[in-house]
Length: 143
Image (tube, rainbow, N blue to C red; front, top):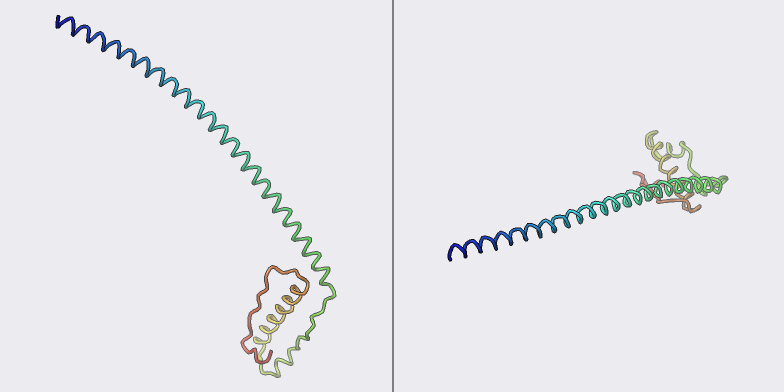
């Protein structure tokens, strides 16, 4: 009787084992199918992202090109507007600065400073500036 019980128990365990193997096999097959579908979806998403990225890069290049053309047009327009414009303040000749005690090096620096000031005033007057920076002269008491 104990032998019959042991054999029945073994038989029951073998059936359970087979059922589990079958169940695990179905689940594994379903998981492989899910993995395959997810990989396909991932590929489609990657392809879409690549197309969108390329389209955005193309748009950026188009915008850069348009921006460059607009900047060129603005500069041409600004140069036309500035033609004939005169700086409203006379820039002193070198002799003036020499008589004030400036040497050639200082005069050259003043010419650069005053030229930059003239350009800044022109840009401000014509509204064609991104930013204006004016430095200082070392002997500003004569300016």
